[in-house]
Length: 489
Image 1 (cartoon, helix red, strand yellow):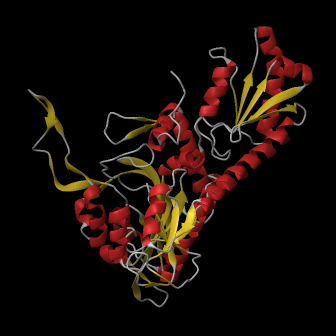
Image 2: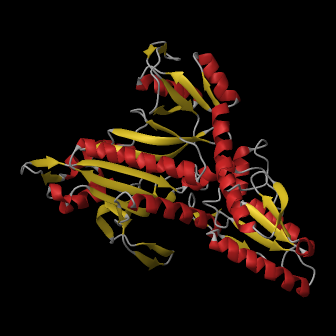
Image 3: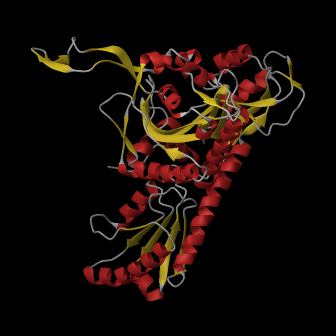
């Protein structure tokens, strides 16, 4: 099968879908709206998972696991929360099947006394549990994270970006004071920012969501927003200050140092496998994936080029030495020495899979004592002496990691514009998209009107926003700052 994919300019959506499939990241499943994550795609997710898990644990968090099923009554205890998720919930009503002349059917006598919701998120089941774990200020803060799957029933899905079932982590913490909870919310936002920019090489804007866009049941929702190559925004992570809403709903109290009973303060936060989609759309090109070295399953692929077994034996002596040197540097290496495919096929395959650096060694390289080094992001080839190849490659990988970030940042800056009137606002969104900085009057009514007419939403109010007198592009009412509008995934 041809590895060629449609170009981004020709059809960005089709380019993305074809790339996910042909690069071996994921596949469609027999269950509508759900995906199969293939080993190469899961290896990227595992790299993300390990990095984030270390960052959480280094800031005092522990992992736990809570049930997939949540009693329906739990959702009715926090009105805003249930309203936010009611249309996305999958419901379990029976617990048994039986044989019939028509085949396997649901046993109508095995109806549950109370329906169970397959978790769309775990606040309710976790806060019901925390009630038994928290009695005193000595039990706080409680800093828990879980790696899990969730289900949110989706009508329109896209691999990694929006699926009915997806993988994520969700943190849920309890604190003695509002200040501590807010500090935790912002600490996690900083972790997400560091991960996105350092590991993913993806620049993000930290901000706070409007009341209309915040998480159901939260007091404030903070987010990181990234810009994809097609000019659409992608919410890459959220961290929520929940106030005492869930503590009130589930009666979670503690005795303070003075022996007085108080409600605890809460946060929740999460990122999901949509980060794999973000990674693809931030860096990849018409020839395939472009992966930041820190998240690539293989940072280096080594391809021996040979005609016969005798040549292969001599080349593999050098390859083995280079592999040893690279591995000692902590570099993840794969050697592809089989004869199932030609070198040209392998070059195209690993370019499609986004391996950051490719090393090729043939008979001429043995004579000259060189290695052909191919840099995936810039598609540049050079010949480097075999002696000292390991430090050269290690330095090259660092360059690629930083270069990808710089390129994405430059694109975002070029795609961020200020507008002061509604006509220009619509023209910019229609022609090129991107982040549009504009004044907004602060009302939900105006926000919804703009969304209805342009499909653009307020992605966030940047946390480092400068105060600036102006007038709302839609209503003309006074405004003290610009917000970020964009069409989004």
